[in-house]
Image (tube, rainbow, N blue to C red; front, top):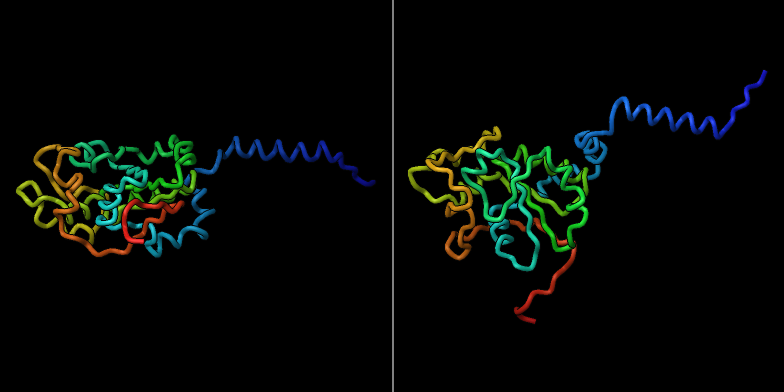
Length: 216
């Protein structure tokens, strides 16, 4: 005896089964979503195309033509000790709440992720790509590297902190006597009074801008 399928009922059954599976197993989390995207976007990390030198970030902090957003992903204790001027403390677990904001950024927006080294910020970069694919970058070497470059040398800093990049573990390698937050001199150094660094520019705006002045 042949079996006759009622196509509308059969299709509805498939949808119900899929809905039940989602209810049972849940929506893919951001790590799982990144797993689907890694083949397309993973090379940006492997080739370090999205890791910006402290010198480039300092330049962008003083660039009035762009909208710079700095997400500091560190715990509140490290944030209170030291953070960059105008940065926002955002937990990696709170990034999904930023989805709409990220999707509505202008073409002149640049997001830079900051952690003590690169461990947390690299994971956050993957999450943000899974969320909204914004124009997002990572501070190379994190706050530890930033302080290696721009930290004011005095008794509250560790003489051996510069070696910390060789053994990243997510911790702040520069101890401070006091929690200074963005009041520390290295929170936004004067770009005209710090040694000039040579670096390859990584940041690319989604829209070209015409800057005032210059030749031609």
